[in-house]
Amino acid sequence: MKTIFSRPRAMTETITHYCPGCTHGTAHRLVAEVIDELGLRESTVGVAPVGCSVLLYNYMDTDMHQAAHGRAPAVATGIKRTRPNLTVYTYQGDGDLASIGMAEIIHAANRGEKITVVFINNAIYGMTGGQMAPTTMPGQRTTTSPAGRDVDNVGYPIRVAELLSTLRTPSYVVRGSLHTPHNIIEAKKAIRQAFQYQVDGTCFSFVELLSICPTNWGITPVKSNEWLEKNMLPYYPLGVYKTPEEN
Amino acid sequence: MSKILMKGAEAVGEAAIRAGCISYFCYPITPQSEVAEYLSKRLPEVGGTFVQAESEVAASQMVYGAAGAGVRIMTTSSSPGISLMTEGISYIAGAELPAVFVNIVRGGPGLGGILPSQADYFQATKGGGHGDYRFLAIAPASVQEMVEWVMRAFPLAEKYRNPVMVVGDGLLAQMMEPVDFGCVEPTPQIDVESWATTGCKDRPANLINSLFLDPLKLEEFNWKLKAKYEAMEAEIAYEEYKMDDCEMFVVAYGTTSRVVRTAINALREEGYKIGMFRPITIFPFPQKAMRAYGENPRVKSVAVVEMSNGQMLEDVKWAVLEKKPVEFFARNGGIVPNPHETMEFLRKSYEKHGGTK
Image (cartoon, rainbow over all chains, first blue to last red; front, side, top):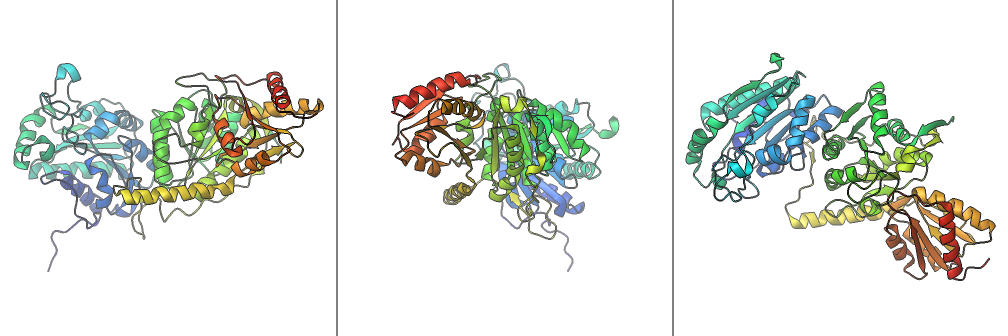
């Protein structure tokens, strides 16, 4: 009998704690598949964030380092600079990366740290219970924007991929999405390219993944995918924003 | 060994290299930016890593990453910067990682000033950041002692898998004194393969973590930390100066102890039987040895001199259980007490409690 599909070696045999319909499991698996395909499991350190995906370290069968909220790029810098032969990636949500960790992500990108960042943008704080994030859409209701995000009061959602792509330092910056099988396949290609740039010692690499949070959005997973497509895609266009070759 | 005349801050940087620490993450802050300037030049010469971080918050998290990766790592800062670093320090303590922090203390609170102070004693000895953790905290009193304790700090951090803080001040960092780097033999680093993030080749995956969602497990971990901090009492270091016949002893550490020594030498010539008990480890505090002196019937009083509003004073009172009166003198805000005012305070305290001449 030939095995055609199995759990990636880089993942542990653990049932995740994620809500039904959550896309974290998909994103985890894509990262693990890429680690397997590039043969990096024994030389990888993953840096887990604060947020829903804090327990990433339970699901990955690689060395892991749990970081403080927003600080994963600084922790990854400390690991990569002192052990440059390791492959170091961070996995961060939008509250973690785009709010409390904005300084760390911009400066890690600007220093050109040879790390990979996987950025999950689901337009809301998940673990703390559905508060407004820097990426929350205009008018989107959350527990701290009960009347909907008022852009006159709190400004517009931050487009991190666009922001990072303005930096002069060479990098790979791409935005994908996890709301359809086709987009998931494309997202994996982006993650693989991002890790490849790190392995080659080329540049900082950043993959933003538009994701859904049915629990805190208060709609079904199917409706969530529709909501993402209708509301997030026009504001957060998919594509490659920067490649090191451009420089 | 030959001695080199060196500025305190630069000597701290060189001591780290001599101890086998060739990675340094920092953020500039007066009065210790010379550590960063020195290491930015020296580390490339020895194949090391120097990164000027975007903030002290980030610098401490880079230290957290490097400590987790199992390399010898140090950062240095001054009071407001150390406050920002306490986030990383708490995680490092929670993940039980070895790392060395140097705080060149300046006056506070807030932005405070840039001159010598001992106002961060509580921060160094009682935890500083969130959660129930402690540093092994050491307070040298000269550039030579700073060098020696920075070099010893790395193996101590590894022995206890705990952050070690070396506490200095602007005087110690900015003045030049002759130093001998050969006084401390560099020690080989401990084996880190069983816990560090070095890549899981031929072993199970390692995890650096401080999250315990099960309160019973976290409590168990807190007890483990408590036992570790008690075990650190094996490292207690202090100096006794003219304590043999003293009727009053002064407790002072770091820069202040140097002024007190000068004052005692002069007062001895006037017939005052005054000694000095100088804590070198300020956590763990040399409580038992100090208590024994406090219980000695010959000793009539105790005096504390420090550059804060009485932070170490609390530990001294607890050590002597207030069995003897404890007098207190301080200059604060960046002022180093001068020998004359210190002598005047000591004379008055000595005579007030019936010291003989």
